[in-house]
Image 1 (cartoon, helix red, strand yellow):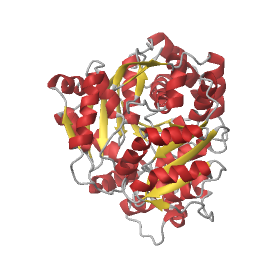
Image 2 (tube, helix red, strand yellow):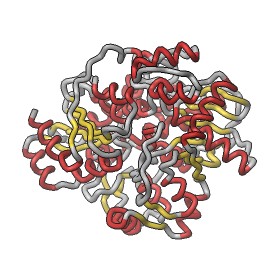
Image 3 (cartoon, rainbow, N blue to C red):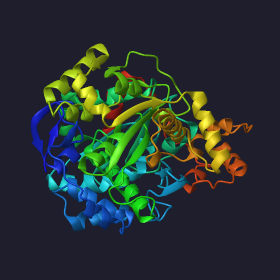
Image 4 (cartoon, helix red, strand yellow):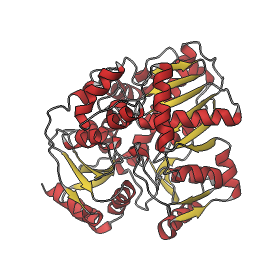
Amino acid sequence: MNYQSTRDSKISITAARAIAQGLSADGGLFLPETLPRLTPEMISKMTRMGYSERASLVLSMFLEDFGAEELSTYTGKAYGSPGFSSSSAAPLHKLDSNTHFLELWHGPTSAFKDIALQILPYLLSASLKKTNDKREACILVATSGDTGKAALEGFRDVAGTRIMVFYPLRGVSEIQRLQMATQSGANVNVVAVESNFDDAQKGVKEIFSDETLREELNGKGFFLSSANSINWGRLVPQIVYYVSSYCDLIASGEISTGDRVNYCVPTGNFGNILAAWYAKEIGLPVSKLICASNINNVLTQFINTGAYSRERPFYTTMSPSMDILVSSNLERLLFEASGKDSAVTAGYMSALSNTGRYEVTGKMRDVIGETFTGLYASEDDTKKAIAEVFNRYSYLVDTHTAVAYKALRDYRETTLDDTPSIVVSTASPFKFCESVLDALGIGYSGSGVDLIDRLSEETGCPVPEPLAALRGMEPRFKEAVRVNGMNDAVRRFVES
């Protein structure tokens, strides 16, 4: 199975090359030329497997130039202890008879990005060997909060790599900032950008397309790669937990093989919910994908109208990982919905860059609308959802998961659809202590780490060890640059 670019479908490269390269030279994203098939027999077989075994099987369907034994070794290392605190990397929590939460925050950084970023270093290192690339990978990451720490932790001291993370200076929670700023490792660097996430992400993309910088780095023995979900090696492990959660529902007797389910996903850069779409496309029995946004609801508007516009107010919210107006992974869905027409996709991306907006055809809108529904939650809605879930079910959720819970509740009230549904829970509530305490009506003073114990004492919920360990740690990284200084920051990093 080869991979093509969303902006030039004539490009055809191996999975290993796609993972090593991260982003196509034309600015497009890599995706499979054809999709494998997940059969009911395979699903039934996986119900008797553990998470790492399921991951090995699903990854083997997409990464044909990786051996089965090789992938089994990688998944065993990535999803075992001590990295993950749960016996399953992605367990389900039953809320009521037809609602479950898929807990994706039991990894070393307490966020869903761990699922992909604990295995990506194995995939990337192997890809470099398979492609005979002797250069050192300089991995660039733009983060809205969680990707940065998960990527730093995954690539910490991995031979043949350096990793540099850019985050919006005032666009992450205090806990998220501390997680990144205190990161250990000889090959890591963290830089704040004096702007929002969209500008940081745009800056990283421009670095990738800067031929002068690429040649300069090549002369020094480096090449650029990405650990964002624009890299297929980041996205494909996310497909696994959708398949795994469905298998868990079967194994627990909640559903039978072939029964359809809905997924409600808090969404910013569109990678997480796109992985659910790919799971559906290969054969997972999914009915609806509910795209849940906060008040930066550009995706809700797009799904409901077919028009995408970044020319709108930008809000800094209590769910900062969703404070995004340019959702990079939507490009992959546009390519698929257009019938794999790279010229059409490139045209939309050009329009977005030049005018700030585009509008898809009615046919493409209908194709997308067959599976996706877009809803959003206000800040007040999010607070009420946190309080409702805790007071009613004694279950504590973070701000992003609360957005998804509210979206699912609204969807059910509007459609009367009682299909079994899974809310994708993307982060520990202890990463957003101030907002969660406020939502629960609990008074507090202080910020960041000081509030972790307060939230635990008031709710009776245990603090994840990776977050408790932040107490007393001193930040290593304090540099902040403007967007136009990101290139020079990369130069300084590779020369250090």
